[in-house]
Length: 178
Image (cartoon, rainbow, N blue to C red; front, side):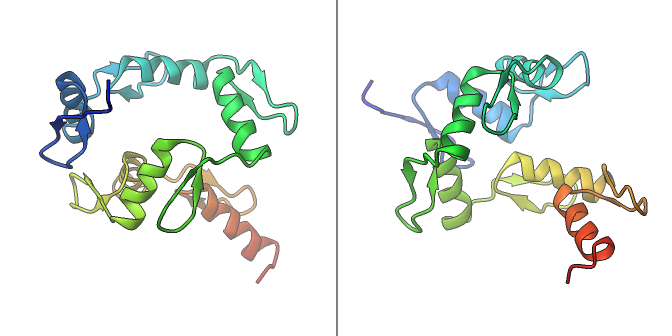
C-alpha cells in the first residue's frame, strides 16, 4: 500500500483506501446508522468493535491503573496513551498552521478540519446547527433539545448540561471567586 485513497466521500471529501471503508463511513457518519446496541445501557454504535470497547471501558473493571495519578483504564494501550500525553508530554503530531501538538495523528486531522478549515459536517436533525464532530452534536442534542442536565450542584440543586459549567457555578456562586 502506498497510501492511495481513491474512494472519496461525496458529502465531506474524506477519502478511503477501500470501497467498503467508504460505505462504512457514509453509513455511520452521514446516515447515523448504529446497529450495534449495548445490552446494558442501550448506547448504540456504528461499529461492532466500538461496542466492544464501550463495554470494556464503561461496564467492566478497569484493570490498568496509572502509577502517577491513579486514573484507571480498561485497555493497556489507553493507559500508555494517557501516560505519554498527560505525564510525559509526548505529542509528536504538530499542526503546521498554529504549532499545537497532538498525541495521535487523527486528533491533528480533526483539529485542522474543525479549527483551520472550519469543517462542520455533522448537522443537527432538529435545528440544522452544524458541528465539527459527533460528540459535540450529541452533547448539543442532549442539552438543547432533550433538556438533559446530568451535572447537579450538591449545594443548591441547580443542574447543568456540562461538567465545566457546574465547576464554574460552584467557584463563582458558592466559593465567591470572581
